[in-house]
Length: 271
Image 1 (cartoon, rainbow, N blue to C red):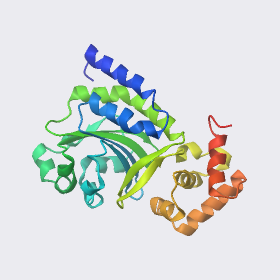
Image 2 (cartoon, one colour):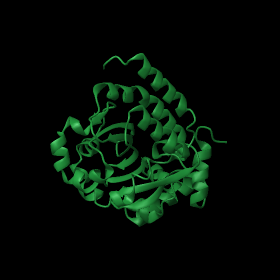
Image 3 (tube, rainbow, N blue to C red):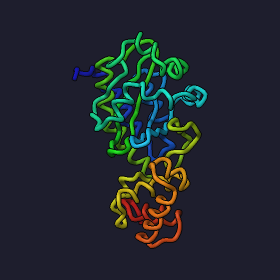
Image 4 (cartoon, rainbow, N blue to C red):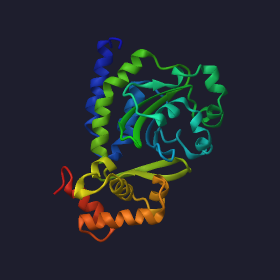
């Protein structure tokens, strides 16, 4: 790790202070992602939620006028050509940042189908990524991209320094009400939402739920239907329904909303 200049450390501290304003997912957009863009002089910053089992990805990109569905129509077909995606799906992840330029030269990157079909429209010549939480089957992460020049060692260190604060802000957001628009970019491309509930690892263990029951409940808490949850988890709709029946019985409720409310209330900060 290189020694960061005092002025860079001051910028990191200012960004960490800024993240204290992130109390739910509504603070992810401009505060967190926009702040990271300014800190690391990036053209695009993305928060990713990725499911290794089905190659699923839901993302929030900043600025939104750049990260648009029309730029990502072919992403699901070529995403496995992204070296960072290949590395991340193999897991487990190192907490250290990795970049596209760790694997590919600029010429190789620009010749790739991924660049030609998607990243050319996004205007990204290099991308750097770091996980925020790795649950094994699913993980969340942050990536930053820009045109013109690669990320350097000092910028990697800046990202490493601020990531504990980013992770803390994401934990607060994940546990709080409040949803924001997102894009499901794989395996299908469609508008969706993120936020508004807690993750599977936070639900697990509450009310005696199994890990799979907690996963199902976390997706329900995000507003997914049984069919959508089944698709995300690689299960049948009938199996998802059975898991929900077990959740209801264990939590002593009779419907989805009551189950989500009961699990949230029983967790940290609940009443």
